Length: 230
Image: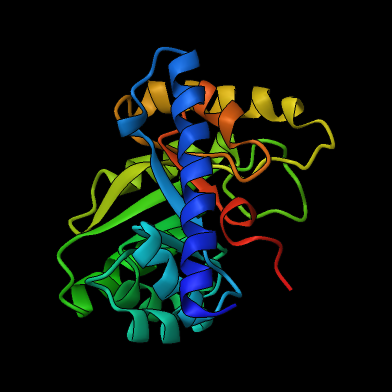
């Protein structure tokens, strides 16, 4: 896809997603301005990301530190906000601290301790993190269990560098997207108890409208913007 063609394609898709965000927010009496769109850019090349920025994308979500590294270096920290939305391996923690504006997938006290220590070593004064919760207790998914969350929250409250920004979830996959609603609702209930004004990162291409109805402030949308991945 050539530059101009890609930009037009992405602009149309971004506009359609934004319209859906606005309609979902209006349905439940919310202001769509409080909902941030994270364009999930994993596996897409730098040229497409640059076209997406020209088309209006402001925030990108990447799954892997290694893949994001080259993108952030070429596309630029100043041109977009970068969120890590995939599992963070301990041996990639330092590079993640150096690269990302937000880490959405904090899933243990141990990882939080490591990130806090590295921030101090790297002289990074502030790093926003979200706690990824596994509400379905799925063996194939990462995330901290609800019963273990209080210990993580307690540690984050003592941190100098890590800023506890909110909660994130990747719910189970259902053919009927409506079946994810209870997971979104439960995440909101947990957030309301521990961090009333915190972010709620939930909802992807097939269910972000439901997530918005249940309180999402960050929606992670890839396919609806970029098309199906090769």
